[in-house]
Image (tube, rainbow, N blue to C red; front, side, top):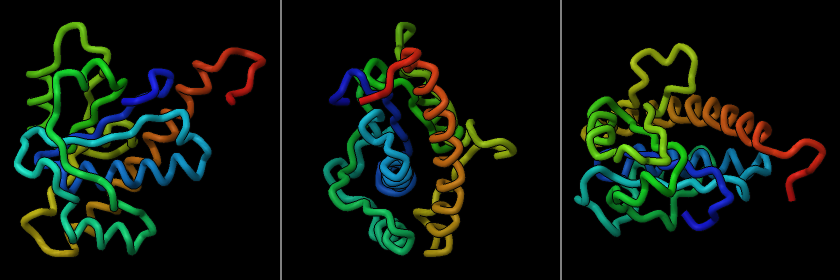
Length: 172
């Protein structure tokens, strides 16, 4: 995370080529539309380093493009111990990721670890299905779910940012 004043969000999936970079792209676009992009540091990573340095899965890029999101320039990276100090929220795409994150989370971590869909009322299990081994419909369903989740998350973040703003002062 580059700006220590920014509120940091890190999305996590297995290889950082489908779900987490898609969530990153969606939240970046939504934050930009609301004028919050300067106040948020948004990133994604994987629990494993299978695809480090690679772009998102082509099917994710295509599904994102159909919805107006740009995933170009994103490259897979692996979760690092420093992430627990640099981000405020680390959001797992499924229960397996959540379990791994909680295992690696140090006692003095700055980051709160949650499921991606934790901020979405009625999200059920809170898991985002992995489309990797499926077809294009799985990627569309993933984007449907992530759009709802990112919108709820952004509402939550905007409320947090409002609470943190000193009374009587506007953000620059």
